[in-house]
Amino acid sequence: MKFFTAPLSLLTLLAPLLVSNIGAGAVPAPALASTDANLPADILNLLNIGLVSQINVFISEDSFVTNIVTANFTVHNPLPVEITLDSVSAAAGIDGSVFSTFATSFKKFFVPPFSSKNSGLIQNVVLTQGIDAALGIVPLGVLDIIDGNVTIRGATIFGFGGIKVPLIGLVQKNISTSYEFVLS
Image (cartoon, rainbow, N blue to C red; front, side, top):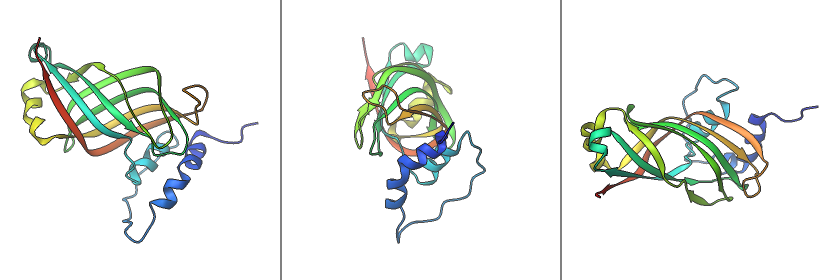
């Protein structure tokens, strides 16, 4: 007998945040067409709860030939329970224009309650518009997640167990982004 579905479980985990984000200054969010598959991500998007607090991009000499960079990001867990990220695929850019994409899986990337943790290096981040266009956005110092798909497990213990929740269609704007040129 199944008592809870993943979206309900995520709602239970998000309940403290739902209550704390409602107040006199709350602005109604636009309505989105939702399906069961993307409901958890829609909730995070509507509440403007971003999971990524920092992006770091590493541009090597080879990047000027391959249009591939390395990156990492810091995940902030706003929940009172541990979360574990199993996989992430994302398209990032500025104002709806995609400049980079990547997909990766993690062996054991768990983030304690109300904490932040770095993803470690992610190889093969593709610059979809090429290095020249990407260099044009470096001075902005921010990136948007235009389309993020994350498989997390909530309420894990040191990365084990938990409730699997696919987050399909995450968006987040103005994430602080640093760029480092790595010369060999």
